[in-house]
Length: 293
Image (cartoon, rainbow, N blue to C red; front, side, top):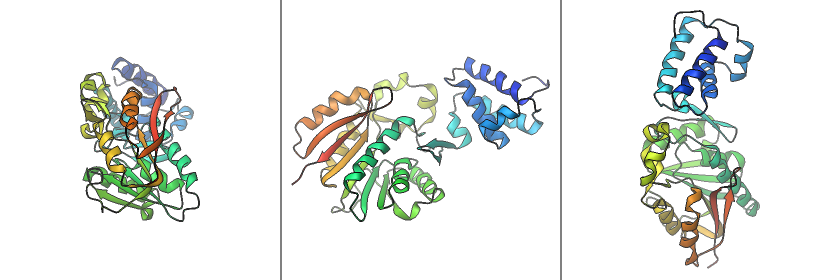
């Protein structure tokens, strides 16, 4: 940016073009979110301030953020927040950035909760909680639920606990550092288990967007050569963790559907496997019921 007169509107126009030339998929949105963050206002307020001059402190802070965004740093990490299910969640590079697709796991969980509406205390486990979006949404939406949020990353658990506290549901969520259920008492069971596990094949790394590949936590992205290594472990361990009639809900890549069907084909402990589609009609999560006995 040269030392010319910069209005809010001109800053947005220039930055949108600049970010577009540096590979952003949503350059105008990125520019608005960053500028609103620097100014301490809502995005909509920018539209009534188009003709206002940007002061030097705003321009300096904005310039630094735009530079980092052009280098690939995700906007959510730059502003430290991402909205999910209409709630604001703090995010850092220690956790995945919440995505709209994961909201379909929340919707499936709420549908399953209807089955247990008469249960005085609905027990839910969120495996691989990350920033805590699934655990927090469970506690926020289901007043009769107690939630266990598990992650093997202590840094992620700290962010999840902060989000639970900020959003007023920490008293109904317990946090546990564990690799799946390894550190949990052997007789602990739940009515619902939800998870957004790592499910990207290691061979797909180069196909990921640069901001994902270079900035989001590797352990939360990649499962292994098939993409289902963690999911298959979860299915196996969840057999003894779900009450009969309980539900396991797990986000997946649409490409993994055939493998998931194959995994459940010879498992009599499970029944009623079905897939939940996202708004694009892609299979985004599976739901399966723990059989009786």
